[in-house]
Image 1 (tube, rainbow, N blue to C red):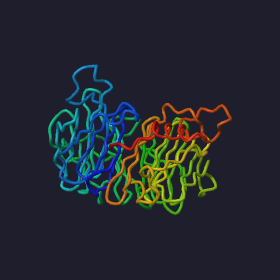
Image 2: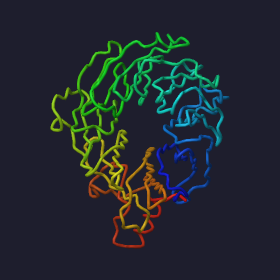
Image 3: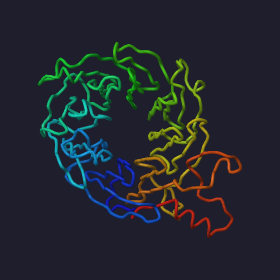
Image 4: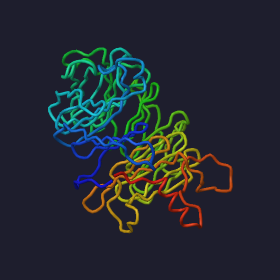
Length: 402
């Protein structure tokens, strides 16, 4: 799909048969049944007045939009923007606009806080505050947390206690807030703080630990004591992206020219040689996806996202996200989204944005080991000397949305 504006796509989220793509202040909602059938509907979600900075999909339960158990699998889209607002979208329109930040809203929490009956949304901004919002209540924040000296860049809900919120600012200062202690000023809600060297690249919570990627290392912090438990990864000169898979005790960091897989159970005192596997990418890796069977790496300096086996670190596929038939290089990826066997990537071609959608759910040709009995989920879409078969297979697997 070619956009009509030279503004790159900045965020991509997938939900079953829907794709949400942010471009400047606008979100494009695209519905599809299959790549072969193409896009069946495109909705423009307008309302923001400036660039969208973050997008999240949350279950509709606990929001004011929830009506019956038939909606259990539905999600609402939440976006933050440089226009200082947050919008909640459902069924193609904006249902609520949340106002209260004194500057651009930079990030949203990864999981709603609170119990099933009363969900709370958290946001961080360039005004150095963390604000809480009732998802089913007022349009203004219910409390504002002060304490950060720099803009808030990351937010995560603690996984062992639903009321705890973890925030990190651009100076790599981490704070933990107990939302049950929130007052109108929020001044007494901070229950712990700790600092890290370097620029923050990512943060995720699991059980009682918070894993923080900053500078060239990933450290595990016990949220209950605010003490450092261990260093999980050392990836010089600088970590650019970070994901973890607790179910397999694996973690992945993206760097200048490669990504590294790490065993979360091991204390890493030294750099690269202690990694489980090296995923050579060849250029900056600032985009990562990780699930139980694949790791997807991408970056702004090339148009080839790579797909690796999670367990082995072996290359399973390399995708070309240029427009079909294009041989010239163009600006690299600006955003990437993965949902199961589907992957959507975006980049820029001349002065237009390009979206490329691929669905590998019906593939039958293995790339890395065609003669072995393997259960790979991503395959090379051509393994035939018959050019007609190759073209047909390529059409069925790759969609350039229009």
